[in-house]
Image (tube, rainbow, N blue to C red; front, top):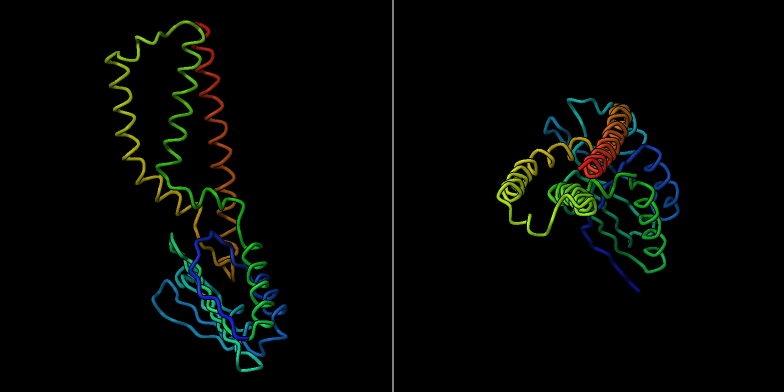
Amino acid sequence: MKVSRKESITQPYVLTSHDLEKFCARTNGWFFKFDFEVTCKDKLNREFSTLEELLEFENSRAKDIQTLRVFGISKDTQTHLWLKFDKDLMRNIFISLEGNEDTVDGVNEAIEDSLSMMKPWYAVIARAESWLVFSFVLFLVFASISLFGFAAGRWRLSDLGNAKIIVLLITALIAGMVSDIVLTKLRLLIFPMGVFAIGQGLKRHKDKELIRTGVILAFVVSLASSLVAAFILALRG
């Protein structure tokens, strides 16, 4: 029986040479050859007839890989495989697979296992909408301050209509709208949806890992400091 899968999915990934080698080795029983094609930052498409040729590609900053396509040529001529990885925010992985059910089952399992292994630790952050992240942090800070304020008896329910509080909330809303643009750009830069850690791309990925760790650590310290400061102010009030 012939079966198929054609699907576009959204998933952050870090694609390394090891991931490609492992996938090709695992599916070698069904495909006798793989062809690869990349679209680079310099707008040129480059084709590779073997995995070795692809892994020898320097992937310099000027020729940074933007899109990778994998074509599997089957031994039985009935199975067809096409994988596409790019850096788009949505539907950045495309899977096209068809053939006999027994073969497709095995290849499809290999694809799912590979995608699972390529998912980075920051996947949730990469997929999160920046305005949701900002809104969550803003809510957490205001909720904490309010909680400590009411608990310490410094605030009353009647204070919610105070003009200063209303102005503060409106200012926070405007700041949130502006920061949405900034946060989106920063998120894409620090927590990208797609990374081709091949050649020099591996070093760029490792360098950004240091930045990501620093950003997360700074965020946690800043949030903890804000909550402690709000708690101390509430007690003193």
